[in-house]
Amino acid sequence: MDVSHLLSSIPVSSHLPRYSLFARRRIPPFGSSQRQRRGYFLCCHVEALVAGREEGKGNNNKHKTEASDLSSWLSSNGLPKCKVVLKERECKDNKHRPIRYVAASEDLQAGDVAFSVPNNLVVTLDRVLGNETVAELLTTNKLSELACLALYLMYEKKQGKRSFWSPFIKELDRQAGRGQLAVESPLLWSESELAYLTGSPIRSEVLQRDEGIRREYEELDTVWFMAGSLFKQYPFDIPTEAFSFEIFKQAFVAVQSCVVHLQKVSLARRFALVPMGPPLLTYKSNCRAMLNCIGDSVQLIVDRPYKTGDPIVVWCGPQPNSRLLLNYGFVDEDNPYDRLIVEASLNTDDPQYQEKRMVAQRNGKVAVQGFQVNSGREKEAILEMLPYLRLGYISDPAEMNSVITSQGATCFVSPCMERAVLDQLIYYFESRLAGYPTTLNEDEILLNDENLDPKRRVATKLVKLEKKMLHACINATNELINELPDHTVSPCPAPYAPDLK
Image (cartoon, rainbow, N blue to C red):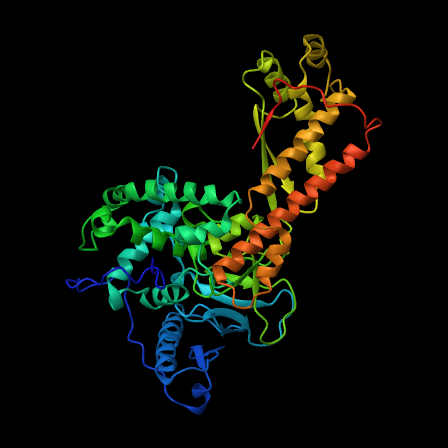
């Protein structure tokens, strides 16, 4: 699928109305002064330089036009003076243009306001639907904020240059939903590209998210009928007739990659599309800077010093790398929130299943329990799993009765039971590792290849980090085995051992 322009496949209407959603002012073109020939200002009174790129004259002129469209639009609609510059990073994929990113235009200190975008340039759900009550109703029903925003941009795209948001949409098209590694979400990858993720749980997450997007597509007409007071301004067919599922999916992923989650605002404003925000900003997991709604604007206050030209980073929330790849198309190798999930469940065929479920609930667990294995804290996760797994291994009714009448999570542990539990964990982690087609060493060799396909590179980074956590789990479990007093004890038979997934 060609997704170089995630919204560009939406046709422009040949029967556009004589009015637009927002009033527009005529924007004079940029002049050709010596200063402007060195770059493009984001707005005529804002010292934010868009760095040029060496390439053919035709492409350069096209980039100048795009930059002047965006900068003129921001300028004419009130973007105040800021301290950032737009730069370009080369993309090895010849199908896409370079990645643009926001960098410091001067030295900055922690606490400085990098930029401030007026609310009239921010797309939120209350603006899309025109009524906050309707917005809250929709987002608590069957349709997400992302779906509503995607639908709105599709209709605005269809208006072409008559749309108030046309320059912003062009920039979103240009970025094509790509993260800092020049890769879009796996939701838009081909089957052969998804094979790069073989062995990783993200493969099933991609399928689940795709099914969720399809369900939302089928509910798009709800927006049309419930918010007819707004969408009657668009003289087109109802959503599912005007846009195919593939077009909606591409728009959804584009919005997903750049939406900002604002704090301390109403429900209808919590998800926002902010010019100068993502995907132009660089996400970082160990950063604390966030876009915040302050007064009548959305501001970015930096959390660290920057030298002129340094990329500006913002926090993406406490998300594991699998979520970062799925949402934004990148992986952060320094992510302190990276984790794996181990799902343990009590055996429903166990005659004592109900008693064990009751004990588990008494100790804050459920019959199907997910355990988070956080990067760097694998042994802590193993120790948290052990009481639950030991409970599943109990087979003697007398022992089970003792556990039921006792207080806390303590239960009888024989040497053979402990060895059986630890052996099951070792087998489980080794089985997960065996599901990957490459080893850690082979991953390192791939990543050393400068010509490696960008999608293959980001997928390899993800699976490499997952394997490192699994190896750390095996090492932690072996340490516990080595601490056992008697290594000659054979594991106890466990006819109703818990299941691990």
